[in-house]
Length: 180
Image (cartoon, rainbow, N blue to C red):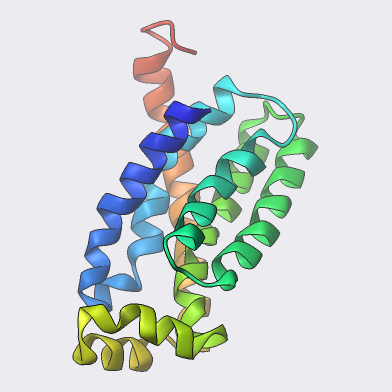
């Protein structure tokens, strides 16, 4: 699980750099869902144990919390990961259909980083001040409840696309190599 978590976190951090431009911050969850799909789908293929996705999925939010993000990230991620884990359980941990839906829901956890602006605004603004006042003002204008609904939908759809890409890559490369 550790290797997958490190790879996922590296992808999350690298793709997260697009958030340095406020408008791109809104598509970050969608892009992460698409690109990280292969890693998470490989993880779900290799580790078919109860609560493994939950544990895997809570590592990044807990690291973010330790790095200074608010409780919003942990609480919303906890809810998302429980739902994702329960959906995965319905498919007995090995159904592509349920793993895909589970991953699509899993992909929405990163929206919690933006939801801080709406649910813990003062603390989050202080956290973002290092990026400058113009950045904070731009985020305040961009992060609204209607926009967040679209961002979450984008993350969900990105997760579905990422799952299909992951499935294709698993079949093409990892099965041939004997990894799955």
